[in-house]
Image 1 (tube, helix red, strand yellow):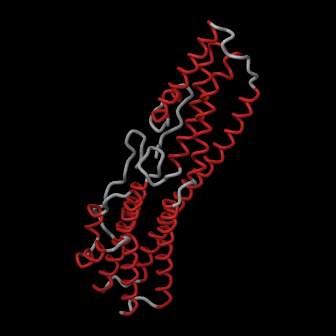
Image 2 (cartoon, rainbow, N blue to C red):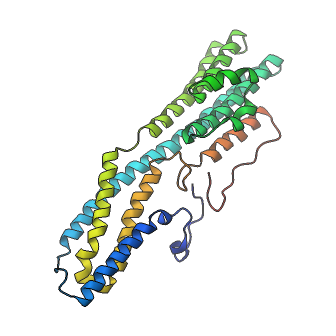
Length: 308
């Protein structure tokens, strides 16, 4: 995710970090050269293109703008819902850890081990969920938080994040059987575990349910078609500035299309995707602090205005 102060009006035109321009500049150049060719032909051969009225082009542009607006809204809704779910994960993780430290007696060795065990599993869950959503290997990052007796079970599980929640639930049940927590406290702790499971399910739903392909295809085809015919429709009225107008409109429509495609997949590593690494590191720092650890990992900092 791009994090930076709003640049002043002049610098705004020269910023590439976080812009979709690197993704679409080839398309813009093609439309610009097409516009230049059409304008040149119109200049030397004035009757080569009929004098079209710009009304159909304007109506076509309005319709395309509505399509792109609907798609951008749908993509942003997915992005924002994903961000809210990770916000809920922060709340559930902190609340569960705080209650574990408050309600389980840490003065006994049994209670202290249970506290450390559960909180480290919560940390491992946040990292495991991030790696699951990004299709990467979580073990180099979470192995230090997993007891050796549990690693075989976790490595054999189909869903690592779900298996970690299962271990947390089992440990809380063991604490109840050993009279470390009461029935009421167990129910409260279990509610937070359920909230973490809800976050996992919501993120999986977002990841596994993309925007309808036919809708995306329709919008992209319409954008390409509009930008291709635009120079022919405006050359009679705009003349030699046709390439300029064509480039600006192509940047707008192709840029909206590319941006909505990025936002529709919020868990990736593109410039405008969610900073899941930073969020999971925040959970890790907070929970280790709750546990009383002194050597805390450093927060993830933005590199060149980009936070991952």
